[in-house]
Image (cartoon, rainbow over all chains, first blue to last red; front, side, top):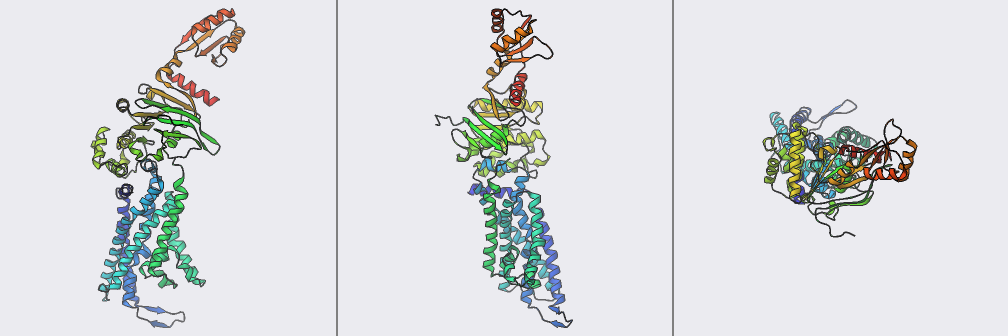
Length: 270
Length: 307
């Protein structure tokens, strides 16, 4: 198993696409971290009600810090997911599946190795994405004269959980790739679901007074891991405890991988 | 059932592989012996690659078995150390360097990274080891594919169309290299759709068409087929037809536009002469024709396609 793992890990790090995605994600998170920190401090918890009366409720600076610092798993989780997806679809696309199964005909073992090998890469995406967000967010908060809250243990806990959530997302990507190994189809479905379908469904479920269902969706579970949900604060709704969110997201990854194992992974390689 | 099988022997037994209504491999049986270079021949679409994919555990057989040294590929402990197979010259991630491509698979095969440099040296790719495979020519890809098969120093080499894209110099090099490997006692199976490409390299031939075996022998056996064709011409066309129909109904093929002329395969001129004499048939021509091996190959495979 160690040998299979080393082979799968080398596959991930000997191509350049993951560097490109890592850099793109970091740049994206610098932008989002700074913008969100700015908008939170400018608007400072001012909410305008439908009747037009303005009530100022000062948001807890701790909540602001936690929400800003954990933006990566809320808005950029698609990056580690894509890296995970590519570890399977890339093999199909470049027809390297043949060689992979020639050197290790036990296909289930290859899939498990891909899942495990995605974890250190996911950690790296989590560290880079979260660091970029925290740096940009804390800088803007500091400039705006707000507390960065970087001395708070709960903030650091949220930051750590943000890294953890990104790590799990990378593994979920591998499972998704196993179900849908066609690269173009996988990327299209992935982007459509994460950027469009799930946010709409979450808002819709809240609107029909079923927020309890929305919390089981993968994106919601990912945000629950950090305990600070942008969507939940925007749209209202419920959130799972962090450890349940973690279990649900890991469950999605393993379920997808299991479905892939008994469907696409078993097929003839032609 | 499995008799004393030598570790490098390939054995295909009653193999069937269907894709929907298509029988890509149809009750195919043959063996490939160690220490020899065997050509696995047939036209495009004959089922060569499908047979190899089943043998290598990449596709499941519909029925029948395909084994390496008596074991199914998937049951071999470290398969890449027993069998080195290159099926497609395009199976590389274009973004990896040649050396990184090999380094990826080295841990799984169980060889150190230094082995990657050795095999690159062997196939002559050491100078471009750090170049990305995306920029490689077909010939360089073929060499990298070969290098990959060599990583595990396997007893059995299976190469699908390895001469595709090689220049004449590369083909000469490949020929020598395959002979060298077989000389070390390894099993070398080389597929091709062109006999002339491998006829100077191989010891044995296995020829298939439409998924069925049409011929298996050593090269001498194939050459025998080439030599034993006789052109027979008689002024008595009806008499000739009757004689041929009686004696060699399956061996005759007509000669274009000539009534009273026939080509007979696998029959010697002496046999035809004595039969004609006994039948009182006047002959104007009785000549052994030396067919090229390619003609034999084409005829063998065309017959199966027609049938």
